[in-house]
Image 1 (cartoon, helix red, strand yellow):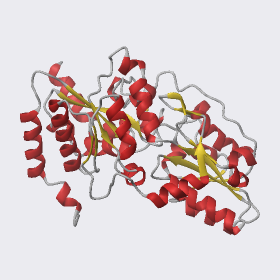
Image 2 (tube, rainbow, N blue to C red; image 1 turned 90 degrees about the horizontal axis):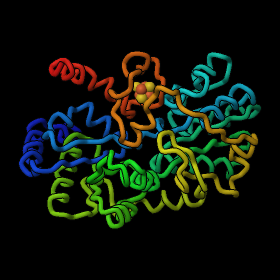
Image 3 (cartoon, protein in one colour; image 1 turned 135 degrees about the horizontal axis):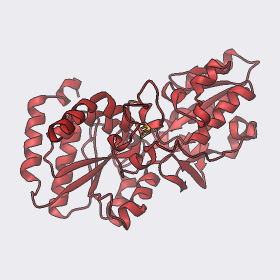
Image 4 (cartoon, rainbow, N blue to C red; image 1 turned 120 degrees about the horizontal axis):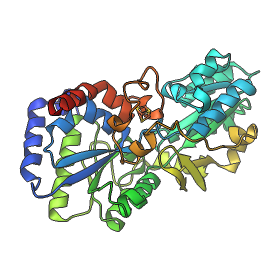
Length: 381
Ligand code: SF4
């Protein structure tokens, strides 16, 4: 790869779109889920869905790390910032995720909490080193991509004896979420979410490789194509999925071979295995409690585990009654199905997590799709 423009070439995109339209059987429908929020963003930003024939439909999945963070976990961080006097560090989008009673970490900051935005886990560790008299907690979120950097700071804190640093761990696992969707009543029994295949995440797969997806392809008879985040990557992946469906194949294919291998990054996997273990259960926004779908800090690093250090426990809190994030994250509804979309809920005033991050389905639709959707409604009215 030399330039990103190579993967955004309009003429090549038109050629791929024509191939999809030519090869998609008009007698059937193709429903593909893009698991990852990065793909949701790319599809909305580059108008990929507009290039597809009407019988090829993309369904948003739950792969946006900010979106799946449940209210109760944000509440834990807010309580640490306001009641325990810690310096609470996390990524920028996380600070805006709505918590219970209209709270957020950003609002906690305005109430006097020492909440700081960081760009990396290493930034949070540095803040702890610079403030030896204060407790510093890193609110860690994300899928397999962001887990190795958290593992690195845990190791560094232990090796350097940085006792005033700890991690509130919310790292979650992609394969468990995909199984949960495939096992959901909407997919298995109700048939309200027809799924013919997955566009698999790219960055996550650079760490875990393509091998973990082979199980879904085999057991659930669903093709998976791992794809990069550029529009041509996504279009090529959709074409590969159409071809698999037409041929009755259910395989794992790797469109993003410029960065992803079958085995992934062995060093990163070893680092994560050394510092984390599977959690018995973790609640996801939208998916509910999913067994063995997240990571907890290993006993050897207990002194740097904020949950143990401060004795805080998770309490489940229901989402805002009118927010449809849960249904959107399961692929059951679209952002425009929510009556708060674009009225009470915008990126400036998010009522749910899907409107916070640019990878969230609601934020992506607001930024790139709302005018088209309204125009289409007007045309059919
Ligand atoms: S538009 Fe806002 S309230 Fe509605 S589902 Fe999306 S995030 Fe939730």
